[in-house]
Length: 426
Image 1: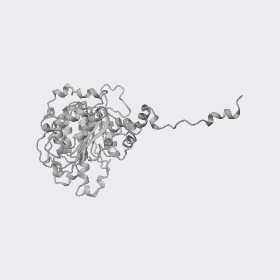
Image 2 (image 1 turned 30 degrees about the vertical axis):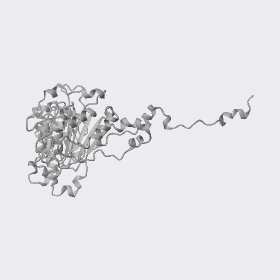
Image 3 (image 1 turned 90 degrees about the horizontal axis):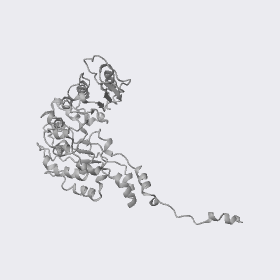
Image 4 (image 1 turned 90 degrees about the vertical axis):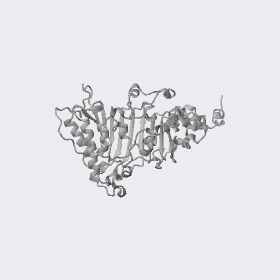
């Protein structure tokens, strides 16, 4: 028969050793580290005024976790280096570029076998006015750099933050610089994207589709034509400073847009990869004469995104707005929208606008202007409907499953387009 002391004996046994994070199975530790992951910092800044520090973030959770111990670092590495950035502070000529700064970056990637985990690559180049005298692209000198990018990284998303003069040799596009003094454009953003491949190790052999091989671009660009990019974003920053000049509408900004769209040599010689089906154009109050490059030479697209109004308080900045007539800004904004809406809602659509399936305005925060555009579509258009704020979607010809309460069909369009009102920044 057991006594009371014998029954209590298990409670008096020595406690087991304490457990720590090091005792967790690797799968559980990986799952915990996953909660520290976050989107690339640059992803939320693509629509703002271009900034050299686009990749800066105060959140260092993954980096801190990787410094705990070797085991934690192994778990954090695939997430920590999913989005990589190379910053160049001392840009110089002649090419190949970055001779003194890119070596350690690529060596680090090779040493730790990071190619299989890298999804996006951002290149930020400090503007030192090194190429202001350049008049012709120097693409051949960029080949070694881009060859190593695609060999050692081969990203699905590639972003460049640099001055338009520096983008010229990187892309092989000609940039008109004679009027650049009229503009305050220290940086542009160019982003190229393609679908994520299930097997990254086989992506190095992926080649552009046949329509790329049949295209006749004005020049060959290793950056633009070596991979089947499906999406391109171009953010040209602020045009506001040019509005202080007499006949500002005649000033030509330093821009890749004319060469990308074939404005000078013809649309069949456009530098834009013919695999691109989604184009995003962002600028702060571009002139309608410049934006007309896009509406008159629209490439074959499925989706078009435009944004003309800054998402900041720049219009309240006395230094930025000195000697600027705000009425000119809004009139040019309205003219740009008139150009694109006329092509979108023309019946039947002309040129490549007939292939467009979705149009999005990044300025729909201007409620009054957006509602006027929606009302115009509701009562005037034959083939578009409002899908969500800022987005128009083309209704298929058969209309099966696409007719919503916002889709309206009428027999005739009015002769005038809605004038977007001037209600601050979006």
